[in-house]
Length: 349
Image 1 (cartoon, helix red, strand yellow):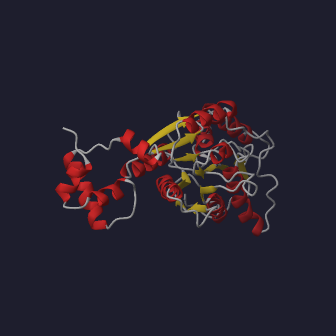
Image 2 (tube, one colour):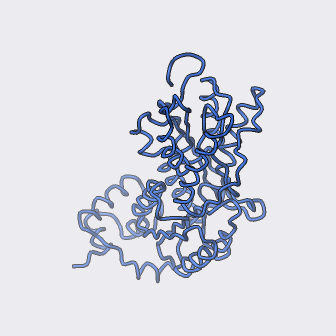
Image 3 (cartoon, helix red, strand yellow):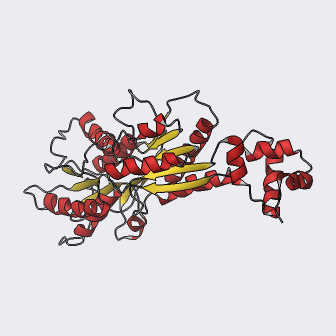
């Protein structure tokens, strides 16, 4: 037996107009929302999506476009977005283009052809301007984890973590523990996030009169086009800086992929971390909490990032552009663990 909105209206004692408002994400009282949702669950109501599309010209789908589905790092963010829109009766489609700009354009074209109500994009880098294809199709879009270099010419809503603050927090921690001989592993081509992290880190030292010109390794920057290759490069960079004539007392890994590669190389050192070298990383990973010693890091609140993107996108879908273009910055969290040696005394921080 097919359940209809008339059945829900009868069970709740509400009008079909109120039920329709709820199903179309229009404002109703909190009391009625709870009553309707409880009845929908109890009756196992399934909306007739074909009828909804014909009636509203909306597909009730949301697209998520990201660089690589092969990495688990973005899982909590994707889950956050998916769960939010499921609660609002949308279907979420997740697509990947494996760091390939040519494939990215094709995936975007395919996504546009499905007429999604909105799209959330994690771009390849800040020079990635293909989000404009989605804008030109008249589809609301949110950019995550970057601010495009063409933002002023083609404004777009952006949500990022506080990358600058995170870098500064890690620098402050190292400086308080007496570390001034630093290696940053490493910068990346056209990466908004890494640029901000490094800037925040170096500004702390500059403000205290330190020369930071030697902090950045003199090797070519990494293009982020293959997660495994970046991890391997992190391992290679770690070995290079530790075999230099004046090896650093501390290394700053600028993201978790590079950090995992560097950590794997650290286990080959004659002395363990942090006796051999202190380590900090921007981004957290389950591995960092259970390794010995555990890794001091800054983590992003990816769940909150996804929720903020979802809430903003839904407002755009409903036509609210009162604060466009919005640049939202999500706070980061510092995790002080055991990978930094205190050079000012005898304690391990």
